Amino acid sequence: MKQILKDRTKKYAIDCWNLCNKLPISREYNAFCNQLIRCSSSVGANYRAACRAKSDADFINKLKIVEEEADESMYFLELLLEVSPKDHIEIKRLHIEGNELLSIIVASIKTMRNRKS
Image (cartoon, rainbow, N blue to C red; front, side, top):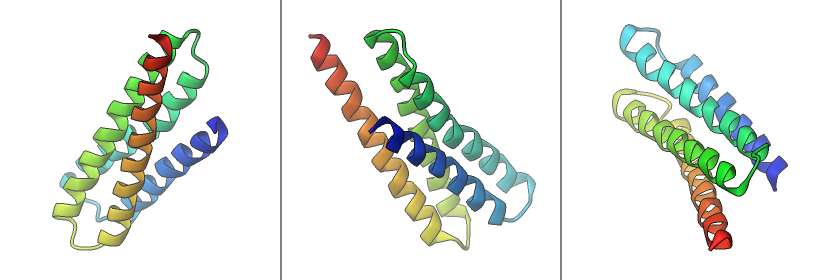
């Protein structure tokens, strides 16, 4: 499962980058795209860090960062959906994928917390 999520989070970052690569170049779009690229790539980077956690508490803390970055990615996708006249299908697809990743991470956090109790 870890490798599947590693691959999936990497693909998510690349797909968000590819979306941003298609959008117009302007000060306004660049602000949203830069943020989306940062947070979407942080999802995978921080998940990989969680996989190397030194304890259950460390794992949970790192997954909380993944949760925040996935939620932030979804926020910027929502903004792009509002302001972009094109690529709505791809933006919606990425938003769905972000939500699925977020759900998996939240479920993992809950499972780890229940295991510790």
